[in-house]
Amino acid sequence: MDIDTIIDGIIAGLVSTCIMTIYEIPFWRIWGIKGILEWHENQVLTSKLLKNISKTKSYTGTYAGILLLHIINGTLAGIIFPFIYLIFISFFSQAFQLSTILGIIFGILLWLLTLLPIHKPITGLPVWNHPLGKGPAIISFCGHVLYGFTLGTVTNTLFLHR
Image 1 (cartoon, helix red, strand yellow):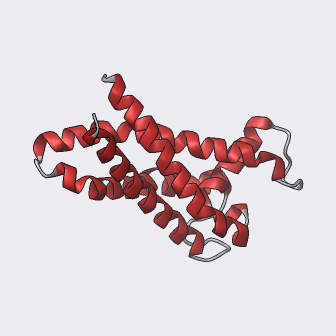
Image 2 (cartoon, helix red, strand yellow):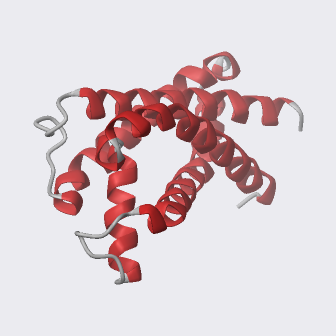
């Protein structure tokens, strides 16, 4: 394993998750925690980990844990992407130009493979028949596309400056 590639992944994942989080904040202000699917999952997990938040209390105290889990998840996923990127460029000479598209595909796959199957088991709320309508699913999907776009762009930029 190349330490520079891991560091690039950490940087790209962290930047991408921060951009995604900033994008989601206005929707959180409108719908609350249940309107941001990833944050709601993290809220439930944080509550279970801390074992001091009941369902009847305010979740204000868990926001740091929610955002910390979101950033950790996005950063860990970001570590994987540069290795996929390196494999891709070994097969396709135009990979540098396609890095953003590859990132978007990666973001969509993360949404399909990690969020969709676990949201209802963790939160008890369905993704598609959500009490707030389709909005949370659309915002989550778009957030993952933005994450992937940023991940591909930042990774490409880091590799070009090696």
